[in-house]
Each structure stands twice: as structure tokens, then as C-alpha cells.
Length: 339
Length: 293
Image 1 (cartoon, rainbow over the protein chains, first blue to last red):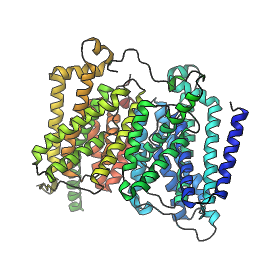
Image 2 (tube, rainbow over the protein chains, first blue to last red):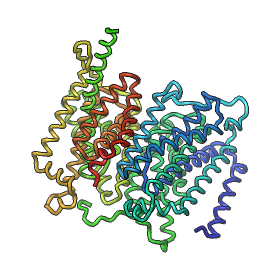
Image 3 (spheres, each protein chain N blue to C red):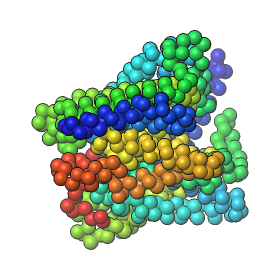
Image 4 (cartoon, rainbow over the protein chains, first blue to last red):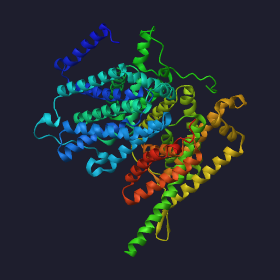
């Protein structure tokens, strides 16, 4: 799949990214880069499911669990994030299985699946708000500052360390994306997204395949939440969980391009730069403007450019590319009036 | 002990009745969403945000322009109906042949737009209508007139929609399209017009809900998030597009929220309702799938 030239391009790009913080040390720009990398990882995790037609609005819930479980274990039990993060990932994974199994077993797809997962992020948000004695409710939560070993508490003050951590996590996400892209599971999932009955008839275990990718996606999203919490040292239910966060993931992944590995990253770069530019340009008057622009862009993208910026660009560059897979094409309906 | 039980029962009864009153408004919301889904096969994720815009409309008309509540209400219903038709015309119509997921996500984009529009235009302050309706004391139980009025208006609205759907030609055409969208065009019905009318009707129901909710709750840009998800759950539990199912599910949910709120915080009522929803998916998926092809 990957030619020599592309491998070399990846190698050079990565070397440049690793070298960057040692050459360029502006803390604000590094901060933006760290945010972009962490959110890119979260968006990539979402797109692992999204590209197979499993549109989940529950990922805000998984991210919230990742962030809050890690922070709560540290604050109330003194458990290091090195143990807390795996526990939070297991918790998110268990929730994904509990909700995913009946969905996939009873063939809940399309609108139903979206609305069920929407309920999931709603539940997580409400539980976090309701247990305000522990989580601080909507006022947010700050992990306690470590008194002793910084490494044990996974709290670092300098941006360079965080940049490298975020870069590693992001790279891990891209590697997993490619791993899935080259696996047999991809073909099974593509078959499922086109026609579940036909896939089942061809010997694909529909429930198991969907559960596997959901579990993987949920685990990675929880990790993204935990890393975000450790970096920002302040989380509120609205910034890491809930429907708005879920929609933000969908938005970025679609804007960047759902079917290419760097698509969600491009989406993260665009959305975060847009938000920052508006914030600096308008100052405190910008409250709400970034989401207004997001929303308009999302609608326009879905109508005019459903493959996203990077996806469309790659198609343009390589016109001889193979026939698009059926689920990427626009649905052709023969007798649909009113179109 | 006996005295304690007496009081407890009265609170319980009060919560049950309040749940029924809440159920009326939820059923109205679910009806609008079900209508859109049943006819156009699209889920408006931004439905609750239309209600929020309607609530702001009520607030400004009553507070700033000094209109009386009963003049402002029809205007608000009209405003949100126009918004619903515009939403269909601008966003859904270009996507009618796109995969359903894209339509759903586009309305998700509209959710962002409406929410942030309200933030930019009206600020994030909580506002209320400033109309204080008296509390009705019945025995030892207290009910707010606002809830009672909402319940009655919601019932009247639902009956009106029922009559419209069964007694008029347009209503019959709407129901027919929801059964088979391909054939109706061949029968000489202009489906585009029917879609627009349905969207406007769905918007009008959101407007009516806005007029009723503004009596009970403060308006702020994120108010939609507090009852939007619950509306979707009601529709899914009753079967998307299934009017009767949605009606029943609305009262089931309202009772859970109300009774859950009685024993603990209101949030736990919501948590309980959400959890109930997921459990129902395990044990009664058939109820969920009632209208699937």
C-alpha cells in the first residue's frame, strides 16, 4: 500500500515534527499545537467508526469518562494516572460494549443508532453533573497538583514535554488507523456498511466486527480525554463530554475528510485555528461566533463537499484512483420524488 | 409513622400528577419530531433549538414590545413554522437524495448555528417572561397553573393535528406519503409542497411548545440541550415516526423523571430515564423497531 516515496515523506515529516519544539519555543504556538494533536487523536478515534457508517454521537461520553475517571481516581484515591488512565479506558470500553451489544445484536442502525448513542453522551453528562459532590458538577474539576514525583503524576510544566507526548499519542492513533485500514476487519466492515444481510450471508460475524471497532474507538477516545485532562489540568462537563463535544468530533472529521488517515487531523487544524483566530480577532465578543461559523461550515460541507477537504483534494490529485467504494458514493435512488 | 406515610403519599400523588402534566408538553415535542421523521424520513437534531428560538421570540415580544401573551403566542408559532419551512428548504431539500446520516449531521450543524446565533444575539443571560402564574392548591398538593395550562394547550394542539391529519386532503396526503413516498408522486401529489407543509407544521408544533415552556422555564441559548435529548429518546422508545408510541413513551418518561426527582435530585430523574431507555433496548427492541422496513 505504502510506496517508498510516501514512506520517506512520512519519515521526513515526522522528524521535522519531533525536532520542532527544540528549534521553536514560543509557548503559545506550542500550546495550540498540543491541542491540535490531542484533538486530532480524538477525531481520528471517532473516524475509525464513522468511516464505516457507524455514526456515534456517544463519543463525548467516552471522552468524559476518560477525563473524569482519571482525575477522580487521582484526587480522591491518590491513584497515579499511569494506573488511572487504563482503568478509565476499561470503564469506557465496558460502557461501549454494554450499549453496543444490544444495538448491534438487534440491528439498530442509521437514525436509531445515532439517537441511542446521543442518549449515551446525555447520560454521562447528567451523571457528571448529578454527582457534583465528587466531580464539582458544571463548575469543573482541577486535578490536584502533585507534591512529589511529577512523572508519577503525569503532570509537566513545560510545553515541550507535552508536545512530545501528544505527538506520540497522535502518531499511535494514525498507526492504529492504518493497521485497521490494512486488516481483514476493514473489508468486513465495509461490506457491513453497504449491506448487512449480504455481509452476514457471506460469513461475516456482523455483531462481533462492529463490537470490535466500537471497542477500539471507545478506548482511544477515553485515552484522548485522559490526556486532555492531564494537559489542561481543568475539565468541565461541557468541554469533555456531552452532545456538543460529540458533534464537534463529527464536524472536524467530516470537514477534514472521513476516509483518509490524515483527514481528522486536517479537520482539527482547521477547527482549532478557526476558533483561535476568531477568539483573538474578536476578543471577548467572540463568544459564540466560532460555533456559528462551525455550524454554517458543517452544513455547507455536507451539502457540497461530503468527502471533506483532504478527501476531495486527494481525489482531485489522483483522478485515476480506483472506483470509490459504494458507501462513499452519493446514494443513487431511482424513483425519489422531490429531489 | 402513620402521619409520615400520609405526607409521603400526598407527595407521591403530587409527583405522579406533575409527571402527567410534564408528559403533555413532552408528547407535543415528540409529536412534531415524529411527524417530520414519519413523512420526510429525516431527524431534526436541532428540533429543541427551534423551540429555544421560539422561547426567545416570546420573551422579546412580551417583554420588549409589550404584546400580550395571547397575541405573542400565535406570532411565535408562525415564526417557528416559517423557520421549520426554511430549514427544510435550505438544508434538507438539497440533501434529500444524500445518505440519511448526512441529513442528520447537517441538522446537527444547524443546531450549532442556532445555539451560537442565540449566544451572539441575545447573550448567555437567563431570561424569563416575568409572568408569575398562581399556584393551585388542591388539598395539600400544589400544582402550578403554568403546567396545567401547558398540559391543556398541548392536548388541544395534539387533537388539532389529529383532526388536520384525518379530516383534510393535505393531512391525508401527508399520511399517505409517510406510507409510500414513491407512489404518491405518481398519484398526482406534489411531494415538495407536502414536505414543506409538513416541515412548517413540525415547526409550528415546536413554536407551540415554546409558548408553553417559556411559562415554566428561563430562556438561555443552551436551554435546548436540557429537553432535546429526552425528546429524541421518547421518539426512539415509541418507535420513530410512530405517533401513538411517542405519545405513550412521553408519559412513561415524564413519570420516571418526576418520580426520580421526588426521591433524589432532578438530574437523577434524568439519569434514571436514560438508564431505563437503555434497559428497554435490551428487553424490548421490538418496540423500538416497530416501524422499520
